Amino acid sequence: MKLGRFNNVKESISKFFTVNNSIYIAAIFIVIIPLISFFYLQQETENSIRNSIFEQQKQVQIDSSRAIAHHLQSDIELILSRLQGLAMSGNIQEGDFTSNLTKMLLTDYYDKISSTTPVDRVFLQDKNGIAVIDMAPDGNLSYAGKDFSFRSWVNQTKNTMSPVISDMFVGVDGKNRIAMTYPITTTNSSGSYYNGLVGVVIPTNEFFNYYGNIYDIKSQYLSVLDNRDTLLVHPLPAIVGKPFFGNFTQNITGHNDKLNNLIKTVMSGTPSSEVYKFLNNERLTSGYPVFVEGSPKYSVFVISPTSFIYSKINEIIDKERLQMLTLIIAIIAVVLLLILFLSKVNSTLDKSVKKRTKELEDTNRKLEIANRNVQIHDDMQKEFINIAAHELRNPVQSLLGFSDILMKLIGNVELYKHPMEAINRNAKRLKRLVDIVFEISQLDNDLSLLSKGPIDLKELMTDIMTSYQDRKKGDRKYNIVLEESYAPNDSQILNADESRLTQVIMNLIDNAVEFTKDEDEIKIDMKKINNGKEIEVTISDPGQGIHPDDLPLLFTRFVKKSRRGTGLGLYVSKKIIEAHGGKIWAKNIQDGKGVTFGFSLPVQDQLSNPDNFDDR
Image (tube, rainbow, N blue to C red; front, side, top):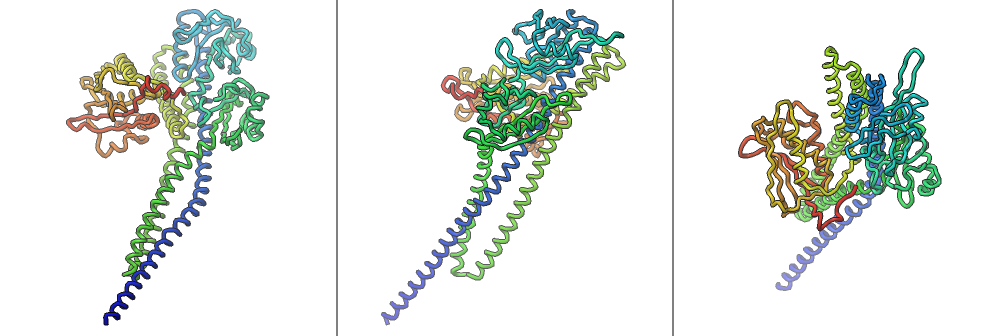
């Protein structure tokens, strides 16, 4: 009897381990097979995704080179139109080259041109090539009275009596420059006579650096050639000023046939792009011609190491891989639990697995549709920005240039003065809007690089406060108070782009001013946070506050708090702060009415970390 019971127990134990061994073996297959399939299929999918994203990045770069070329072309046309307006002004046409009125006229044109373009000087020469008036920044050497008839572009202007954009030349200080001139002509019954010229001198590095990176060869950068294949800017200083098809440059490029054909195609006036080997690396280059008076004057090239593009692609793929792997692991865990449950309720588990599988398929389809819709929406926004930047710029520049000419021509005639001032004012306003849209395009395409350097935040804020004390908006006075919630001897040094950081601070102050009255007090505070590793700047105003539903949308494109403005300022500010590694936010003041805007940036100890500054 006892032996029978023992055999029954032994048989039960044997069945138990047999069943469980089967479950364990099935579980092992459930884990291993999907993982093997995942890695195999993932590799195939990633290659397809990588090629697709690379083509997208290639198209983005082609669009960027086109946008830069159109921007450069419109800026050159604006300078020439302003020089034309100066040459056609009444005083200069009457031969008045020396009076204070003429000097004031040149000063006014210098201010207008330098406000949008980095220029060294604006000058007026007589018919013998002698500089009669020479306007340059304070502290720079004046060339008034100097003879420039030896310059080829002076003689070319005189002989052709047409506008001239010179070849690149080296100034007395060793800097590369180009000159743009417009002839002063007088017409009478006997014909047209050359009386001199007006012109500007532009430093090439500062001029082209405005449109993109020209210094860092390890990331996406800009290179420009003139119509004689001379390299005007390039991160390699040794080839700047040399012909691209000369022996020196060709030895550096390795006589690359693909690159040479690309350069020739773009110089002939046809946009093109190419992927080619350069030394031990691979490059993607897209080129676009810049037309002046109907013929290609410059060729703009945007160059990216493909490793730079693939690093971004790999980041995207790594995130997707991690998400998919996490999802698979989660699914495997669920399946294992279901297998254990299957040992008791096999039929129920089968139905549950089918149901879950269908749900996952439906979820994946919905996610795929949602992702496509998001991508379409993003592409439409980028297309709109590109169209706005490309199509609006040329008519706005023409309107602004001719309005300047008409204002000079009509003088103080009351019948036309106020309408023309309104046209000029609104044209400038529209140009600012187009410039903002172009800046958005640059930021979204990572072409707008930061020029970082050591900045004392306290000094910067003091300068900004001084500028607001000097500004007036009608009879408006600004009641702005600067507070400092940290010790005076604390480090306040940031490694940042000063002009970009100033743009953010003034944008936030302008927002506060717009929603306050004269007697209201706007408070600006700076303090250390995160154990002194960051500086936080806050700007608070006692205005009407922001609706809670609008707060999460403030820093997105085309969202604004008032009927004025473009709704892009806060979006640009957010992109700039995030490019510095910081954060920006907005919140309503809890104890009363008003809003606080703020941002935080990492502190840079200039003395202990002198090598951390980015000299770009």
